[in-house]
Length: 116
Image (tube, rainbow, N blue to C red):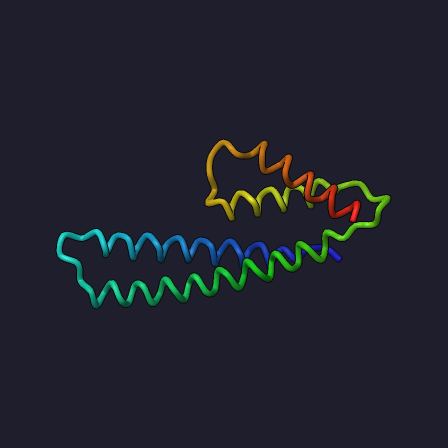
């Protein structure tokens, strides 16, 4: 069973919304004269975005785990490695310069899942 592209799209959209709500809340809190009513509204929006992000992340992780159970004779598929490497990168906050590390760890994850 392959991974549905919609799951990655939903996850990315939820991550983008969470990041945007975080930036908005931080901007309001760093104002010289904070508007606490606006801050409370922004924090409510941020919490809703966090709940949605966690939900989408959990759905994607569950699907990734269930779809990574490959037959023992199967070789790690480049798509699976790429998907896991990208997920690791996004979960880490998209740091620059971590491509190789994420790729090697994703290969190891796929290899270990195949051996299990």
